[in-house]
Amino acid sequence: MWLILAGCAALGPVGAIDRDVVPEATVVAQALADAKCGPAGELELRSDGPRPGRPSRAADREKLDDLPALERQDVRASGHLQGVPDTIRGLSLRALAGDSVRVLAYYKDGEFRLSMTRAECMRGGGYILHEVKPGNGNNADIVVEQAGDLALRVAFGPYEGAMAHEPEMSEGLRPYGVWWSGEGADWYLKAATDDSADVLDFARAIACGS
Image (cartoon, rainbow, N blue to C red; front, top):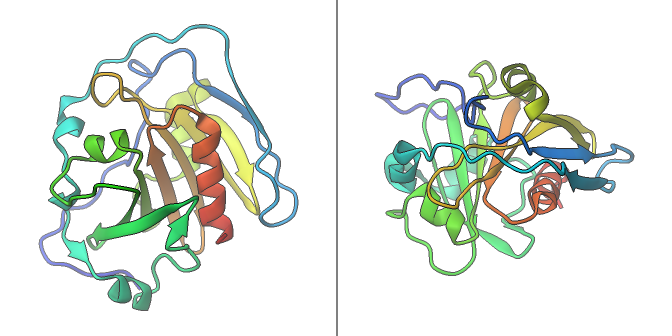
């Protein structure tokens, strides 16, 4: 059951990869699906150096409170984020937001304000999880179709998905994105870590509920 809020526009593709701004050096991974919650596998980067992307100033201005805040009990009661832990890899679920199409969960340690931008949240080590109603351009197949060999097919636990190094949001901030589908929804995780393996491991913890 999806939350219904008045006045919400339809959601376009989330985290779509623009081939003109994604660097040549993207993540190349072998992520093996064995038992549920099994190991994610090994990750490595291509050796050909990156081509800087054009910073997205619009994304730099997006704030966490651009979407209406949601209460945790209401989100859980509506059937969202089922099995998703409140604490993942030492980061706590700090706030929730959403509309009739998506629910966003913000995980972060230390300082947190809903008035901060998404770029500020990720620069401070935050992870942003999207649970999106199917049919809104937010699944791994669409990402791979748009990005071609700049996206990487990955698997973790029982799920198959895609991973890519996204365009630069602001000076020096380039997040990794992981997309997968399951439990009646499409999922998209975004974080600006130094190591792509950290993001895939975080996605694995969400998908496996551990």
